[in-house]
View 1 (cartoon, rainbow, N blue to C red):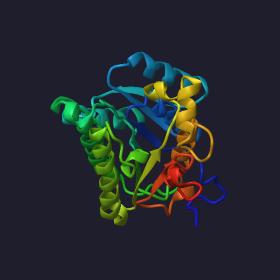
View 2 (view 1 turned 30 degrees about the vertical axis):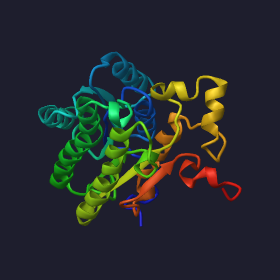
View 3 (view 1 turned 180 degrees about the horizontal axis):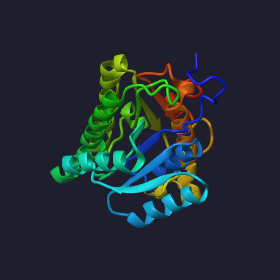
View 4 (view 1 turned 90 degrees about the horizontal axis):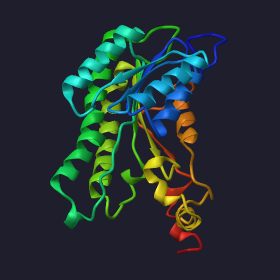
Length: 274
């Protein structure tokens, strides 16, 4: 039963959310979707303060609450300071969207140790550090009756490459596979504390990081061959899915990975019996 009689379980009014890597691509649309659902949003960035501040101004212009928060998710001191600032400026935290990620692609025999370490540090270790700090906040605050049925919500933004191997991207695929098991383990560990942990795994999404895969008709045709649904995803597809997943409408969803991929994980090469 909803704790807020007559309220809309999809709304996030009175809640505060942190979106790491919120200054571009998927993170921008996730931030917008959470703000439109009523959450106050902390938009994390590492370098591009101009993009983060523009997004904050846009959210405020629409009547929402937002702040830009600098922090490198690979640095423990930065992460601790970032969470402290969010509590001071927004009054607490109810939602963490672990979105920050990078790619440094190369064939395995040409991949440097630095490229391996950089991707693991951001895509896996950074997600651990942020999840740890969010958990500490959620355990201190507990369930806030009338605000959310959960004490806190964590969403790991992973990728279809947590299950699909990806030649030439060993570091990225290894990190995303690690994220999948990190999410499940934390979900198991924290559920008794009413902390919901889940993941979103996007497929081919039209963002600047993968522009080469869709900006020409030839490239788009090759990409669409991998997507049974017949279109490339938009960042808003992910943003809306995240907003649902952290709402009370999804309160019984724990330890799940939601693939937002147009069917990419359905092995489209086997259409027509292979």
